[in-house]
Image (cartoon, rainbow over the protein chains, first blue to last red):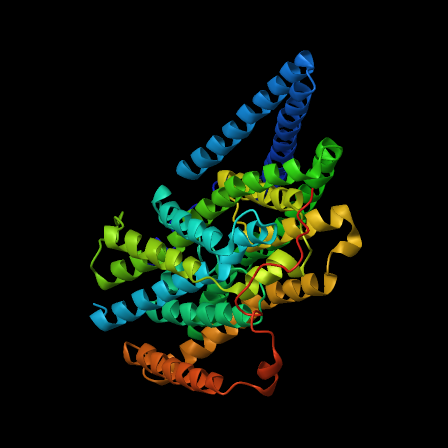
Length: 89
Length: 383
């Protein structure tokens, strides 16, 4: 191994470029659109739950609170997934 | 054995590049958070700086993707690397001066390719590698981020559109702090390691480290992390203004969509091992989030200038790298050549700094807040 080959120490693997592009488009699209939808649904859930709670509509408050909580967990999981992907790249 | 002085020059140039990388790319991470008032500018930059520093420690695989598969590895010398770094630094400074976001990684690749062309001719360049690892990703990144951010904001407006804007805006601002932090971490992880890779190469060539499985010394990791963090901390308001308010006037939901989509695309690319430029992704995301709301909301002239800068990055940094290598070779190569290049750069910097002390006539009528306040004057922060 020459000194210069340190620069060349990475490998792009056997997968073709088109395969890589396809994966990036698929994962990137799903994750990018997904996180925005999840965060929006979380906001919607919690904000609507707050309004329903103030109006005395307990059932709606619980249902929307549950919606917000579920998507809050999804968002936290997405952030943890992002961190893990950085750690294990 | 390569002289200690040449080693010091390459390490110094690598850390300077790292600094300009952080300085130049701060805008990628903080611009949207600042323009939607999710965070005050100083706090946003401080958080980005800290997370860039932390990000540099997250993974210690030598980031050798720079130039690998693009130029003949066996022909790379420290003089070539030095000239390539000079080309990248100068292009980063020039695009910063004009407030244009451009890829620091492309600048470095362009610089090394140009210097290599000057040193060994076109046979040392792998055209296929250049297309596959640089050109195609440069096309994919902004288009993908544009589409993803555009779709994301359409769904977002659909979901939260009927809610009261005040709490929604506050919610998205909080989300932006998290998405911006992820971006800063990813930037630190990706970009600081390019510098670590170059310094490691220099140490191997010098004989300080073994050629087989060299272990990155702690001081290399710490100095690279510190350089990019310091660069981020002193980040230029010029590019922040371009990214944050000159392309579109963003609301908090658009800012979150641009940042969230950008972070997702970058992490997906990192996972697959496909090299995407942070700058291209975030810029594409910002334009996409704006265009999905209303095409005319995007200042296409500014976006066009950015695209021109992207196209010019590799040739311009390459030409500068080639000239730097040519001067170095004419001065005798070895350690003397890079020393002469450094002397010329110092003289040019001194001349430029002196010239700047005489304000141009128009500066007397410019707004005093024009340089210091990257925040837009209008809020535009409603979802």
